[in-house]
Image 1 (cartoon, one colour):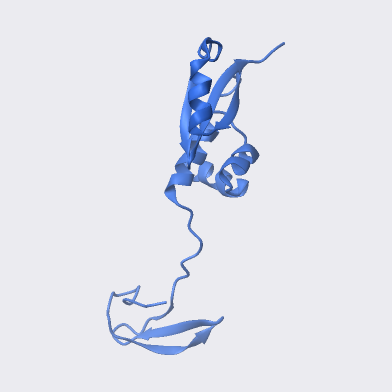
Image 2 (image 1 turned 180 degrees about the vertical axis):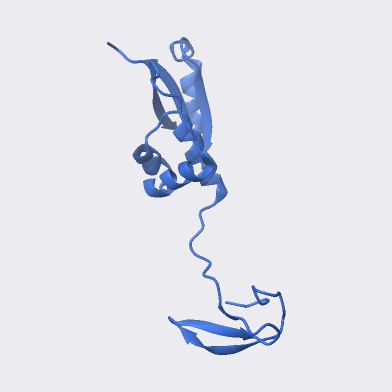
Length: 139
């Protein structure tokens, strides 16, 4: 990993100063500040964050979203907390979803029975499409 400047003063003048927990430590020559290189960590593409939050708002559970996107349900919970996403409570409808390829999607919309009733949302999911439809809970 390359160190660009001192995180304290921004100086480009620093020297190596030992190793702490298997990470190189540096000392700034200007402000005498000791620092180590920040870990990059594993980042998930913003596309998946947006899709996960959209699906959460559509009523899917964390585990359902995990199975669809392949992203940990814990990460999804953390994003919901981070962005303060609130979902409506006590809905009379529940979402049903299907994952279709482009040819299956076109066949779905040619059937008039699939167009009647509640609205349908189609969202891109990589090379496939996710179709979300709401149905009333049966008493």
